[in-house]
Length: 634
Image 1: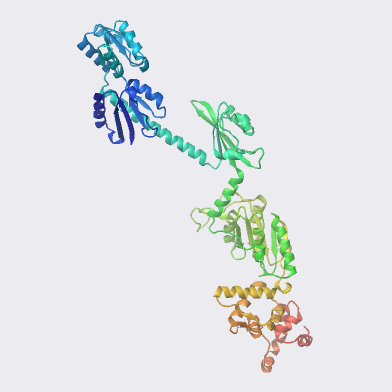
Image 2: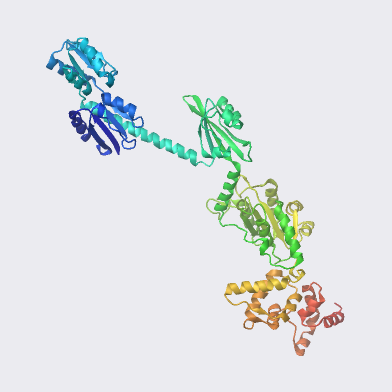
């Protein structure tokens, strides 16, 4: 809707305006308010109440000066309006000399028109409203015997006894004024939309933006660039003085007329590093100024990391810290202290230890103790996937790289771990072919998706883990030495559970508590006489095996109590191979005589040569075991 205010000096003109409005092609868009008043009565109009004001004569002039924020459209005098007024004056008053009052631009050819009517004319233009009385006296002294002009001039002339005729506005003039008002309002609205759009773009940008005119004066700046430069005042300031570190590139663009991008600069007095791009603004084949864009590289890297994490299929986070490592032993205290120091470094770490010693627990703790803790933690078991599938998981692929690819391709784990940590479990199991590709990624810090010809920069810390000796594998030709040196920078050895003093008891009780929480049952109590059984057991599967035993004991318990017998059954369940040998009948012993040497050897192997533990496993005392070893020459 377009809101118009018409100010007309006489009622007849109001009727004409109403008639033109009612027949206008865009009348549905128009909301017009028509007021009949003289120039002395011009109202006070709120700036936001009307889109445009249409007035004529002295009223239009006063409105233009009074309401600069509202466009004012003049009801100008047409040649036909002038001819009609002169003709009416001649017909009624038969004057010899007419005084024509008006404004410059409206009085062209008046004298020539009067000569067509065989009368002379004197034009008084421009005439200000305040000077009307003096100008009228001057016209009468010059021999003018009639007057044509606006409504105010006619009132004054009649008071002075001078015949007068109003120059009336025709409907065609009203129509042109309405059309001009519509076009003006539409143009202003469009300009406001464009202005607001550019303002929103500039001020919502995360980059610092400047527009510097050809003279080197800053004409536009946004909040970001002010913050980058200590909130200094920049508007209408010379670039050379306000931001001298940008002046050289500005001058280069002004001189060449060519865009310059990718300049890396440090904002003076800060640690902010920015990427600078300068683009010339060319209008009418001339450079009117330069747009300067400053991107905070730190912010870009953070945004890139967030985007990569969002695009990855899962939320990769490390949930464990060093506080989650349950222990009482001094050896684990030392291991944790070493791991904490490794966390402060950004070098690659290899964690070595038997199966079930908690390698991923330590890997997550190192990540959460490092400067990368806010980045992703991505883990993969290298032994769990065949070679081709492992490579597609690690490096990703583009659509069509091989049969069965996902639409749009897939981001690899290296990309998903950008800015964080990639944990490669069982690293000793990967093929030599995959080792070569992995080595190249670590050397170049770039990854190429399968089937792609582009490389992607990555920033990833590698923590690997193995239960085999990488050095021995390399001596056997099964592991590349150059890759070993890349991975084995900081080595963390995790001791087996049997070397961790009383940790087995602490962990067993903790696992019982966890098991009870999961099943919603009461935590069982442990018979103190059963504890030696835990200390003597070899735990070849370490904490992973201990977890199974704790779960088994929870099921076998008597009510809310785990007896020594319950724990014995949990530790030594019967099997087709060596089983619990205690309390075996004499007849069964005789039947098993032929297999006894093999049983002894198996028990000693399981207990790493520890005769006390082997004897306990076999259900005999240490002396009996020694005697049998002598008998069978073991």
